[in-house]
Amino acid sequence: MNWQSIRVKSSIPVVMLGVSLLTVMLMFSSLIAMQHKALEVQAEKFLQAISLVLNADRDIYQAKLATTHVLSGIGDVAAERKDFADNAAQVKERFDQYLSTLRAYPDITGRFSGFDTQFQRWQQSAVTLLDNQDAGQKTALAEQEQTEFAALRDVLDKAGEAALARSEQEQKELNANITMTKTWVYGLSLLLLVVAGWFSYQGPKKLAEQIRTLSARLSDIANGDGDLTARLQIDTKDEVADLAHEFNNFISKQCDMIAAILRQANQLSQLTGHLSESADRTSAITQSLNTASDSIVSAVHEMAMANKEMAQVATDTAQVSEQAKRSAGQGLEVVKVVNSSMQNLTRDVHQALGAAEELEQSSSTISSVLEVIRSIADQTNLLALNAAIEAARAGEHGRGFAVVADEVRTLASRTQQSTNHIQQMIEQLHLRVTESRQAIGSGKDNADLTVNNFARAEQVFQDIMQSSLQVNDMAVRTAAATEQQTTVSDEISKNLYALNDQALAAGEVAKRNDQLSNEISTLSQMLFGLVGKFKVS
Image (cartoon, rainbow, N blue to C red; front, top):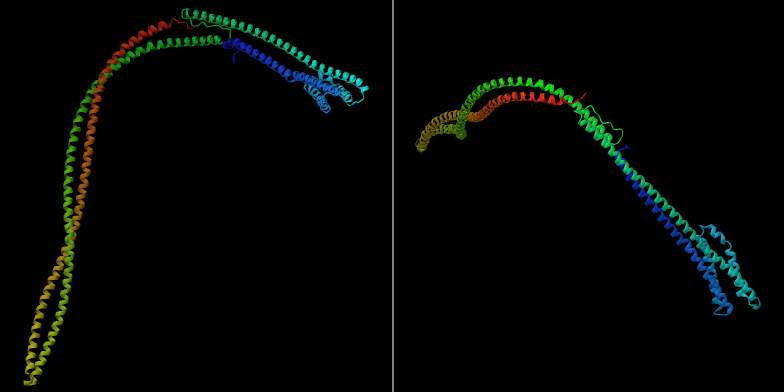
């Protein structure tokens, strides 16, 4: 912490006033504590001790009164004796409490160390007086008891007086301490107020002198024809000195800045020439840029028209592809229907082939049966021939049997003929069935081949449809890309038009830059003249 700062200097009077106020408060708190302690001592010790002595004095009078009543025959003797004993015991007890209360003051309690002896002497003389029955000794005993009583009361009186005197002494000492403390408080407060007043006067006075010195130096710098080499001189170490130091730093930085401005002004004067040359070159470049941008705009416009034609062709291609896709779809549906019919036909051919095979097997079975019938007819014919021979041998007796045998042979012959005829028909049928089965088998193979071909045709139509979809998608994408390219071409054309406008504007800016470079050159000369007035070295 800087103990010479303005804050510390200005805080000294306030701190001293605060210390003064705190000291006064502490002193008065001490006085209040002293008074409170004195009151406690008065209440707890001296007043209680005096009260105990007064009560003991009252008790001894009560004991004395009980003795007088016994000697005078007034009241109940036993009760009066008991009253005497109780009051005498209270006297002893109260004085012991008195000594205990003032045990912190041995100079007082030491003066009454013989109280117990005096109390016993009085108590013994009183008891002797009460117990004596001899009238001749009562007067002497009464005088002795009165003497001891007076001596004991004198002790009690002195004890009360001693407590009262010590209480008054304590009060006087307290008053003296209070008076001395007040004197110190007033004196110290006055001293602190004087010192605080001195600081309150000298602090602002010294600060005002420093500020006037600082103001004078600032006026010298301000009115010194731009002389920035002058500096403030402050010998103190407070905030004013810090302000002067910072102001000197500011002036130093201003010197550096103005020197830099002078250098930059020279460079600016040189740069304005380069800027003028750059402006001329910029104007020429903008003219070339305008010509090139016009050519690019024309080319981009032609490209945009070509893109539009390509987009239209792609759109037409997409439409044709869509039509081909629909035709392929219709062909696929027809192929599916025909394929389904051919599959049904194949199933029917399979069934017919099975029936033909069964018919061929049945014709073979019939041929076998016919062979059996033919064999039976041959045997029957042979039997009929044998029967005719036997009938011829029998003569007249076998004529009827010969007729029957002839009929049987005729029937057997007819059966054989029929069997041969059926055999021929069965052979023809078997031949036709075999040819039919072969034709049906060939038809089945052709049907299977047709079904396979239709399946391949269906796959071909599906491939055609898929290719149509791909062609359509590619055509749509081509159309979209072409349209996007057209949009981009239009945007490029717009940007090129804008670029052409900006090139024209750049030409105007180049002209304006040329004018500004001339103006900047003039301003740099003026700035150099103004800054050159300051003295920096």
